[in-house]
Amino acid sequence: MALHPDIAATTDRIIERSATSRAAYLALIAHEGDAGLRRGNLGCANLAHGFAGTEEDRDTMKAGGAMNIGIVTAYNDMLSAHAPYYRYPEQMKLWAREAGATAQVAGGVPAMCDGVTQGFAGMELSLFSRDTIALSTAIALSHGMFEGAALLGICDKIVPGLLMGALRFGHLPMIFIPSGPMRSGLPNREKAKVREQFAEGKATRDELLEAEIAAYHSKGTCTFYGTANSNQMMMEVMGLHMPGAAFVNPGTKLRQELTRAAVHRLAAIGRGGDSYRPLGLCVDEKAIVNAAVGLLATGGSTNHLIHLPAIAAAAGIIIDWEDFDRLSRAVPLIARVYPNGSADVNGFEDAGGMPFVIRELIGGGLLHRDLLTVAGDDLADYGRKPSLDGDALAWRDPGASGDETILRPVASPFSAEGGFRILTGNLGRACIKVSAVEQDRWIIEAPARVFEDQAAVQAAFKAGELDRDVVVVMRFQGPRANGMPELHKLTPPLGVLQNRGFRVALVTDGRMSGASGKVPCAIHISPEALGGGPLGKVRDGDLIRLDAEAGVLTALVDPAAWAAREQAPPPPAAQGAGRELFALFRGAANEAEKGASALLAAMGV
Image (cartoon, rainbow, N blue to C red; front, side, top):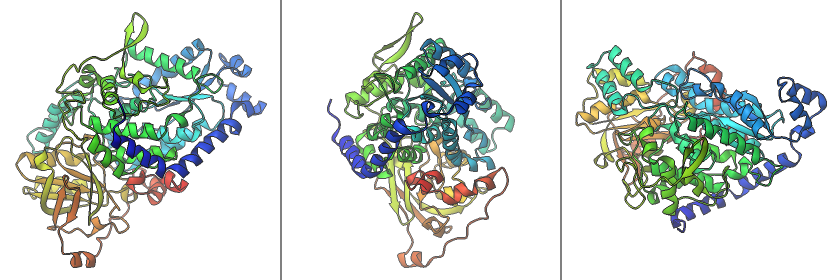
């Protein structure tokens, strides 16, 4: 089917807008491929240092004819999603030898968990861990010892950070290798119910802890459709995984064979072969648009309204929130996965998963099919579901949806539109995810209650001060103020207030991510309050109007009085938990719509 005209037009706008920066990027990776840092140019002492750690492969590496794969890993065993990576490198070295190649762990990147740090000081390091991961990836690949790379990462900032760093080495072929979601535990809606009961004092801390442990219970990615699993979706629609690899559980034979196939494939797509697929050419404007379309079609995480512009910028491509808004009008919502539905990602996978989504979106003219993927030249390869035929991998059509409460065809979607909106007005420019918000909550008009700390919101809730129609304004939460933490701690009390029948919304320059759900949240407000953003002018009692239908976010204050009003003073910079070490990142960060990145700001992109 022909590409939808709105998808084509948005792609053309991005290509035109990015012409100069993309040309500069392509020139960079062409130079790096031809004359840049690579193994053949290293001196003997340099090579000896690079070989010294591996006796088994030294002779092969010395001969210089085989690809040496650099493994960049986010392994740690505190994160359930990354714990399965423990034995991947030793297995991958064996599989590389099967393909006539070698492999070495090039380096590790930090991988922190927002689920562990949420609501506490460590969360203020979270967003800038992405820039740190990009730097770590660049360091790992800077040795010039590798002709390709395998990127082992899954969760929130890890995949974007790996991509941002890896794209600066875009002359190399690279494949992302996931480890898959944990098997289903306590259903997400039951977990959310206990959280709300605890917020109301109707459940004990022990009861809450047991519910959380029952939900997050084993190795693998968390099973709700937040940023981590949205990352995996994007890698599929961008063609950077082996097809269908995203949501296969850890510890299975199928998962092992997909990883083995990725190593073999990486060995086949190097510069010396006839199917050279450098990362910088795979990640083009069409791939970026596909990632945005996939987010909209599946109700993915709002964090990618920050991450995707940052990833794109690292490849010389400029995408903004207006592009998301325009695409959202054309892309139907065809998946409902918690928090936008009751099913988790295992239910999503069982119903057809990403192969079903990709096949349907291609059939509806909503994805660019003609991509240079790691698997081939046709994204339709990713519209087939992997399975084992004996010990061999096979890919088959996913068939009809296994559960139309989770996945629907493009012809009969859950919603004709994708569920993201841009809001503008005298409070700045913001995003809202409405795919999980009932439509009678798309317009909220209520008095403001202003906060600068999540604990203060919880205290006001417990004191009964928020038992009314209210717009909770949470400011000084932007990237420059405190690193733009996710405000997960606000979800249970706001959900309880809405359950009580009040008209409730959140307005913030912080983040809420893919864990946000039924309460309307205007997030990522730019410019942020620190430095003069209008959110700093809001006072308790100001009437705030959030209108997701018209795309409006405004304080209903007399314009003359608004113009004359002074900014509230920012809170003092926080100390402790390493936050002071990230002052450089905060001070240099660009705005959320450009990626909230100190690295990109310093690069001028």
